[in-house]
Image (cartoon, rainbow, N blue to C red; front, side):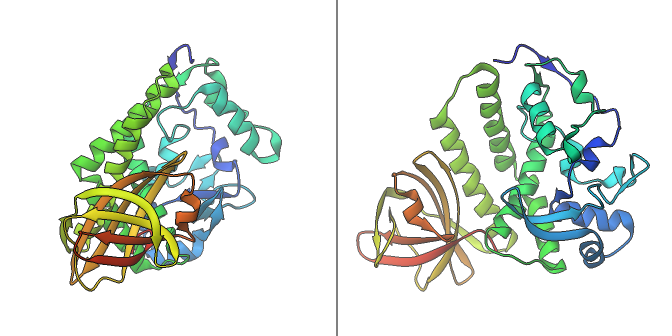
Length: 323
């Protein structure tokens, strides 16, 4: 276990800005950059961004110039006052970074295999843990998750979608339950890394509540009526001819043939939040299910869902993500 807590104090060397060729940003970052530069979002996307897949993440990235961030000039960030969130929170994006693991990671990802030779990380004691900035971690993760949920469903974006995602992220940042739950999640993860205490059941409960709040805030941003469906039971089953999930509930809407879902997994435990819509009303539920066949149930970003209230059944195909 780490022996002490230490604080990272940036030297402003600029090494992290020449670490690789692509720098992840969110729609919120893009909008802020455009305002700060005095250009349109469309111009910022065209001149500075690329939509691609990098490190298993599909989303927006700043295009590096010969491995350097396009906003690095003479070892200084020229957009420091409105730089992307991932830059502000570097090197700790999760609130639980251990210094020796961080140094090893920086060596592996640095350009030319030289490591970040001037970075203040080398001044930190080994086998210690960085003092967290939990508030920045929460804000960063909510913005990043908002984009990740969109790109789970789409491989393109335009200025109107950027504007919506910015609005959605702002609404989520002011949603007190989501903010508190996200802080609790990273507090639990940090406790594990610091003390070795692993409370998977509590993490799963918090994760389920977070996914529900993500869908609920999406529905609220779209100005739809929201109803929570209390589930009486969950089981893996066949929905039509395909593997899926059946949810026993009190009732459900008519006329639904599609929906959306968000999910995460912990081993063989799948954590789901589901929304189905009818006539500008959304019906939401959240649940967990344990099965060794999660990969058979969630296939190609789709989930076959059956809702059963004991009198009738609703079968729908939910697609992963939002929008």
